[in-house]
Length: 119
Image 1 (tube, rainbow, N blue to C red):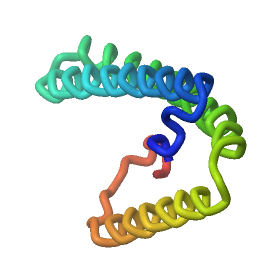
Image 2: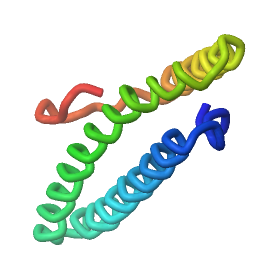
Image 3: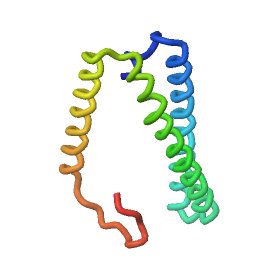
Image 4: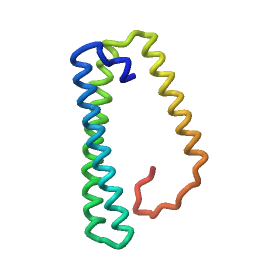
């Protein structure tokens, strides 16, 4: 869908650039948190606290990012995509959701501590 929007309007291109930058930032936060979690597994309590703080920051940032995608990006697609293009997007999303569900069913269930949130 993102590739379908590129080049159709300056506003859409700017939004895609912003969303891409936000995604990179989120990925960086997640990578840092993963590295800290490895240190925490080795017994570094400070790293565990830092990882928790980074993951909270990541969660908050992702919440805003996903909201922007859901509202601003949706409005751009409604304005710029044809009915046929939108149908192709919906079909693609459906395929991805189906594939994710199949992967989920193939994975063994993990036993989670009661304090962990449900997936």
